[in-house]
Image (cartoon, rainbow, N blue to C red; front, top):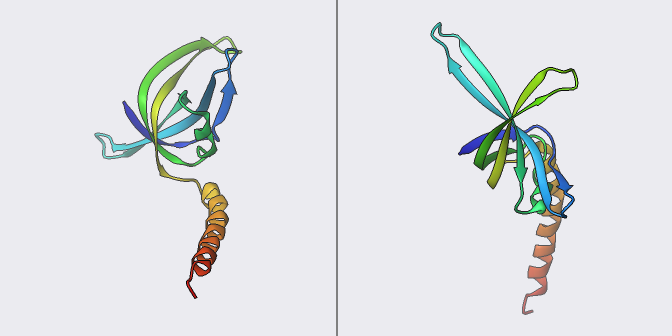
Length: 130
């Protein structure tokens, strides 16, 4: 199954008792359609996601990033602290594809990229044969 949505918070790496690490994050998936009366209806579904393959991916999964996820979905049910039944959707992610980054990520990467461009230009100048 594939879903596309935006991260609702920065990803977190959790270490389990057996020393395995999992990246936990959540995304919001938006759907828009018109009902029989012609009114526009907007629905948002929230998924709690887990990614077990590499904890390094957490660095790029920041709030607001648009991602496409492949994996499987499961439902979970529990009794809340208030004694009422609760339900949620889990998405066990096997593949993550970035479609866009949050503004915060773009501003963090821009200065580093500018610096590397200057270094590349200096390296080119140093390689001149005269």
